Image (spheres, rainbow, N blue to C red):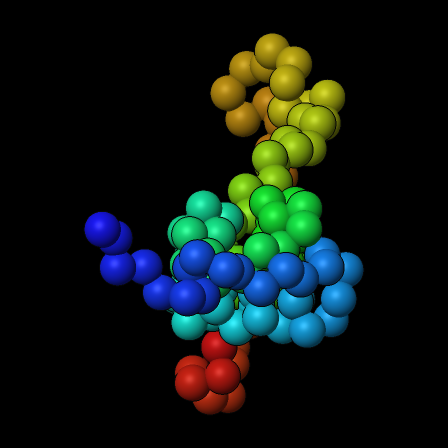
Amino acid sequence: MRNDTRDFLYPTILPSRHPVVEKIIRNRHEKLNHAGIQIVMCNLREFWILKYRKTVRNVIITCVRCRRFNLRPKPIVEAPFSEDRVKEAAVFEVVGIDYADPLILKDSKKA
C-alpha cells in the first residue's frame, strides 16, 4: 500500500485566473531557483490548477529575471559600406583623415 499524503490524494482545486494562484506559482518558481515549467508543475502537485500548464507558463514568462537571462541576442545588422570603400582603387587613392584629437579623461576610474 502506498503512503501518499492527504494533499497528494485530494488536491485543492484552484481557478487559473486568480491572483493568489499566480502568487503561489511565482513563489514556488523563485524557491526552485527559477526552474522551468515542468519542474514547477511537478512541485505543485498538492494543487489542482485549472489550465495548469498554460497558467504556469504565463507566470514564468512574466518573471523578469528569467526573461532577462533567457533572451536571445538580436542579430547585428551591418551598415552598408560607402561607395568609396567598396570600389576598386589603387593603394592610397582613397584616404580618410581623422581630424579629432585623442580624448583625454581627467580620472581613469570614470572611463
